[in-house]
Image (cartoon, rainbow, N blue to C red):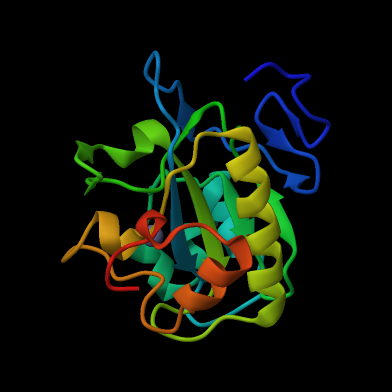
Length: 193
Ligand SMILES: [Zn+2]
């Protein structure tokens, strides 16, 4: 995407996000068609909000010895393009013109390795539980801006692109609310949402 397409985006960075660069990224394959948004949920430690630990995880600055749960993910190098706090605050870690490490082994709309050609958005939350109105507001604005800038044709959860292996964001995520606020055709969403 040319950097001057719109003031909202510059080199794949979103104007309304706090930029906190992650080293965990790489190049998208040549000609990658960025047509998928993947929605996740995360909190560190699980169920605790506003700790700043997700930001630390994505920037490889988390102290693994600080909490027993972190022992189980020690050394993990991951990232997402975006993270939305419970208050609806938005962080960006990787340019949307680069490949973030959020999906893992995955397959959707007939293609595998979804990290190659998707945008990852993490919502602060506990898998299966509900999310805050402020998060839906930020998510909806972000998705609308992504739809303008990229050829987005699909929005799915991690649970839909890695079924059986991943369960986030889970049953507490309100798909109809997102669908309505974006006014995208139902084919853009997983059939069971
Ligand atoms: Zn996930």
